[in-house]
Structures are given as C-alpha cells and as structure tokens.
Image (cartoon, rainbow, N blue to C red; front, side, top):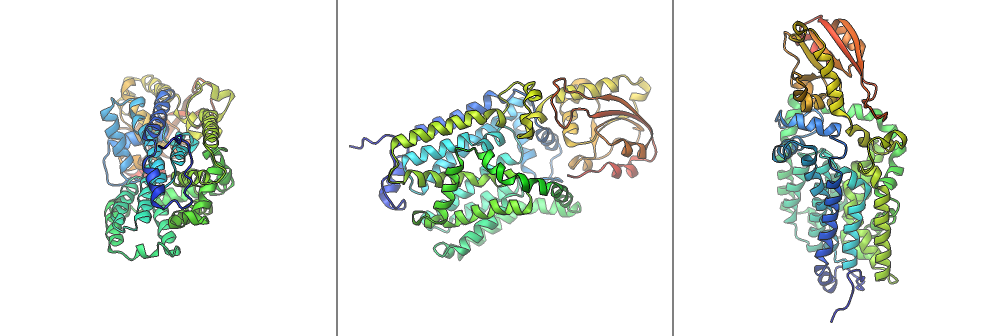
Length: 512
C-alpha cells in the first residue's frame, strides 16, 4: 500500500523510467485543479477594481475594425477582445474572464510538463503553484493584451515539444506548427521561441534526428499559412510594423539596464532559484538530457531579448517550462522530503501575496499617489480615470456653440485616449473620435465638413501647423493625484483647418 503524501518526492533517479512516469500519472489532479481555481478566483476578485488598461481600450476599438493585420500586432487579440466583450456585456469584469482563465491554463500546462518529464507528485504541485504565484504571470493575465495569448501559446508549444522529446514521435511537429501559427496570429514574439527551439534541436545530438522528418515540414507549412495573412497586410501597407520596432528601439538601452533585475523581480525572489535550477537541470543534469533542446531554447530567448533591448517580459512565456524543470530538479535531491516541499510551497505562497499589490490592483487606486507601484508595474496607473477623461472632453465639446459643434471633430493623440473615447464617448454624447495613433490612422480622418476639433493629447505645434486658431481649454487631472501618462494631458479647441483632411491627415500619423 502506498502511504506517500502528495508532496512525497519521487525517489527514482532517472525521470524517464517507467516507474517514474507511472508516479507522474498519479499526480494529484485535485491539487492542480484547486491551485488553478484559486489563481482564476484571485484574478477575478480584482478584475473590476480599477478599469481598462490602455491596450485593452485599443483592442476593443480594433475589434470593431476587423482585419487580418494591424499596425502593431496581428489580428487575434482584437478578435478575442470583440468576442469576449460581446459575450460578457462589454464590461471590464467580463473582458477579464479570458485572461484569468489563461492563468489557470498556465498552471495546468506547467503541471503537465512535469508529468510528461516523469516528475514526482510533489514536483507537479510545486510547478503548478510556482506558476500560479509568479508575479509576471499574475500581472500579465490580469488584462487582455497580446501577452495573454502569447504566454499561453508558448506554454502549449513547450508542452508539445516536451511530449515529442519524451515519445520521440515526430508527428508532434504538426501540432507544434499549428499552435505556433495561432501564436503568430497573436504576437510576433513566438518567432523567437520557434527559432530558439530549432537551434536547440540542432545542437542536441540526442534530438537532432527529429529535425529530419517530413512532419517538421508539414508543421512549418501550417505555421506559415497562419501567419502569412498578417505579413500580406503589412506588405500591402508599407510595413508599418517597422516604424513600431524603430520606436521600441528608443527604449532599448533602458530595457537592457532593467532587464536582469526585472527577471528576478517579475518572477519573484522565492522562484528565482527554482527557474535557475530548472535551467541547469535542462542543460547539465543527466536526468534532463533528453529535454536539452528546451534548455538551449530557454537560454537563447532570455539572452536574446536582452541583446535586442526587448522589454523584460518578452521572454516570460518560457518560465512555465523552467518552473516545471526546476520543480523536478528540487524534488529529485536525495535530501528532499515532504517537509521540504511544504516549506517551499509556503514560501511561494507568501512571496506571491507580498508581490500581489504590484502585479494586480489590490490596493485602492488612491494609494498609487503615496505608494507609486506604477513605477514597477506601468499598467496599474494606466487603468484609472478613463471615463473621467472622456467626460472632460465631452464637457469642452458641449461648451461649444451648437453651430460650431456641428463641424467639430474629436481628435486623440494616443491610442489609449482614442480607445477610451471609442468605448465611453457615446455615453457622454460625443461623436466618433479620430486619431493618428497606430491602426487608428488607417481607419481614416474626420469628415471633410469638420474644420474644427476638440483635441486631446496632441502636441500644440502639430495643431498650429494644421489649424489657424489653437486654444488651450482644459488640463486633465485624474482626481487622485496619481502620476501616470494621462495626468496633466492638455485639451485644445482648434478651428480653421488649413488644408483638407485628405492632405493634412498625414501630419497626425504616429506609429509606435
């Protein structure tokens, strides 16, 4: 009779042997389900505490302009935003259901990786818990952005690769190509993972033979078929994504300076030894030898984003795999006991609770004035007071004489402001808003009859170049004294359009 506790480590030294795999198949599914459910519930508990982040407002607007591509991302996330909003009543809480489910999915994926690699029951639970409390995952899965499907697709691809390596069945290449293609329809970031994985296979003698398979070709064709519509759109529109990449490079030096501290902070101090141990297990431990391509890929994607000056979270999707490998490595230690697992689980939970106010809106928004957590997690402050800002624009619009309002457009400087006006403008009696930011620019200028405008967040020199009269009429305050990108934004009343919109609209274009 087996009397081992759920945290009892597997004593098999080689995780690929059948007894270990049998142990993994008996992994406590109830425990995994409880961790996944708790992660989902925690996200939903604060889902409506502040409001939409600016990217969510943009994707909601983009969802009403269906296309196979957009200036700054492929088509999937706007489609998900529109579908989710339609199914859940177009509310903040409703939009957050899908991201919260994605966090639960990451928990299950990490646990499945452990089981695939033959890890113990204790390792399975520890990997699931590490994923559930990882600050990077908790913060990213709080909102519906391109990162949401990106992280999940990375997890799916990594699990499929692990299963292929464990079974030596090259047919998995077809499923990997399909998953990666869906990821490519969400965010271009998946290309880094796929390239790193191919290098990992090429340099791993035990796995190199899997590259010599027709199924890899089939998977590649599936991948290309799913990403090519976006590429066609980009080519047809003059590759506007290049402008976005050039804009991102302006922050490359800052990103490099913050990159390594962010890798430690975003995962959390308690989890750092876990994922570093996972990297070592994949790269150097004889027990992890058959999964070495994953270790090589993890090393490449983390290092490559640093070299390129990418944002610190761009490589975040790799940590499900590293948590799984790290949990296996820890619980395989001869001195590891059930008590060791309980202590680590308690430390993980405590670390997650301490970091929660940084990752998600636990504290009331007014606290961000005295405790500027948005300096660590930018999106915290970028999700407050959007209706208040739209209301201020509406007040200035209504203050115009009726004969002026009839020829007055609403202009927004960035996609957050434009998205907020699209989401809330109707409630305040505003006409359609226009913006030159990213894909909004392609949705067209105001009508030819609009020779005046209320403009928010647009540089006055741009306005003076296109209008005869430019008057500052209001300055936005979020009412909480919170420092964010919208605090202090200027609102102008402008009249006397100097040239038709067909000629002047280019001056308002801003991709980045």
